[in-house]
Image 1 (cartoon, helix red, strand yellow):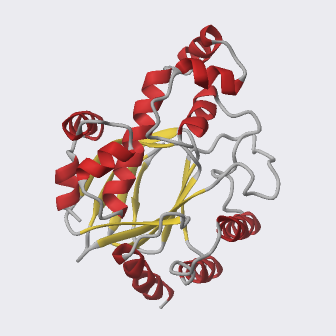
Image 2 (cartoon, helix red, strand yellow):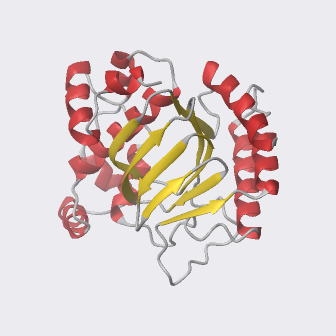
Image 3 (cartoon, rainbow, N blue to C red):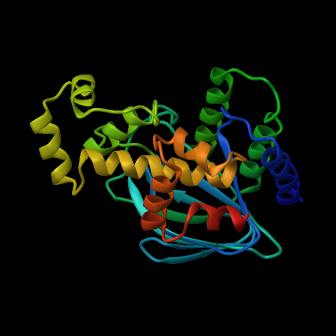
Length: 267
C-alpha cells in the first residue's frame, strides 16, 4: 500500500515539477539504456514500478521496493525497464546531512536493499510537502531527517561523504552552483584557494581534467532535466551552459549513447 501511495504522489510531482524540491521522479514507458551515468553526490534511489538494472561492483537487478544507495563520485551504466511503466524516486545528499561524518574503512560504492516500512512512511510525508511553498531551509531539514533515519537503519554506509573530498568533487560542488555560467579555470582556482598548475595536477591524478568535469556535470544535469521536467530540449541546453542545442545533443549522445530526443520520447 505504501508503494502505491508513493506512486500517486510521485505522479503529481511529475505533472508539476518543483524546482527546489529535494526529490526527483524518474519515469518512462519505454526502456531506457544509459551509458556511464555519473553520481556526483551520494544518492538514494527507490524503485516504485518496473526494474532498474545497474552495472555496479556487481550486476544488480532492482525491482519494486528496492533501495539503491550510491556513493558520490562514481559512474555506472544502467537501464530503466518498464512494467506498464517505470518510476523511481531519487534524492541526493549534501556533506552536512548526516549527523556524523565517520567513514567506514570499507569502501562501498553501491548497495541494494529492501526499503523498510519506516523509510517508505517518511518518504510519503516528504512527498506530501511537494506542492507546499516551503523555504529551502525547511526542505533541507527534512532531508537531514531522512539521513538520520538512514543512519538509524544502518543504510548510510554508501551515502556518507568523506571528510577529505576529492579534487573532482570540490570542483564539481563549485561548478554546480551555476551550471550555465561560463566557468574559467582561473576563477575556480581562486575560489578553491589553489594554483592552476596544482589543480591540473590533482585532477590528472584522479584521471580527469577541469573541462571533463565541467562537461560531465553539465550533461548529467541535462540528463536529469530531460527526465524530470517538461522543458524543451533547447531550453535545457541553455540551462546547462550550451548555446547550441545541436552541440548539446551531439555531446549528450556521445556520453550516454542515446540522444536527448530519444530519451524524451521514451517518457
